[in-house]
Length: 393
Ligand SMILES: *Cc1c(COP(=O)(O)O)cnc(C)c1O
Image (cartoon, rainbow, N blue to C red; front, top):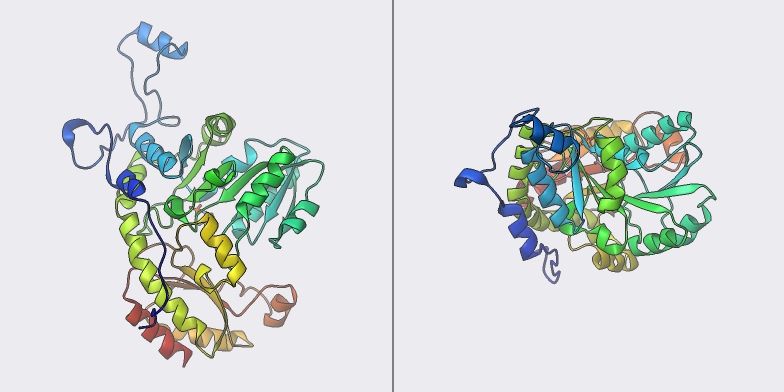
């Protein structure tokens, strides 16, 4: 009833569904991919080994490099995102740090745009001791971005939609601006998954994911991914991947291949419940503002659907409270939500991102201490709405 008149237009491409479901080159006709749980691969004879080292013929060599199970996953993620190549890492931060550091050197500058995942900004701060500087702007308009580009800016790094306040940036415009100045662009695309947003098609150079969220889908795997062109992957693979060494275990790669099989269905299922919950929250008198693509103003909505084909179940809202006691009352009254970080699993999660400090001071710094973030799991929208209703009352 709540959805009357609203057309759900989230859409997963049929060819993407097939990539998620089918395995290619699966030996033994096994229905599940083999987990090649081996650190090394040996050679039949001296000549084979020598030819491999001379790069005359290639074979599997060492898992901090290539592994058949991990390669299967990388192949799928690259195809889903329409990139030439993908490398999978042992965490999202492994992917973020490798993608950022591998193309930079002392003296370079990075421009971060939109509300960025906090540990990524901590990493940017760490890079200052190697003489790599950064600017961080939370504005998203292209004029503000252009005016913050410096002579030595080598990379523009964005998150869109952001994972805290869900703000969006114009990816085509950023890509165009950066290309004209020979600046690399990178996006943290975790919110959308490779099914709903394909930034490389919009001109962005490097796409990064935390696979610990929707791709795993069950809150039991830590992993990350970088998808880009072969040319840009060279440095990322040689330095950030092989030398920093955050490679995934083949078993985790298998769990992610399994996660991919159900991801299209999981995302389709949460679409409906998310739309109903967003609708409920937008009409509730105790809620000041809802942050989610379905709650965007007209202009952002248009931009969103021009660069993504769907939304997911991460959302946030500003609650009508003036202190942490009232915020705590709401959070503690929720019965069907776990309080915790991360998102994208089967469970419902609640998080209040800005609680370290004084309520009024946090507000004065431009952050919303009354912000509540929800990640909706695979539960019925009625049970979620009833729970929110009783906690709000
Ligand atoms: C979780 C997350 C990361 C980091 O991923 P890990 O797998 O936790 O290392 C990066 N970006 C966003 C938006 C995230 O939500």
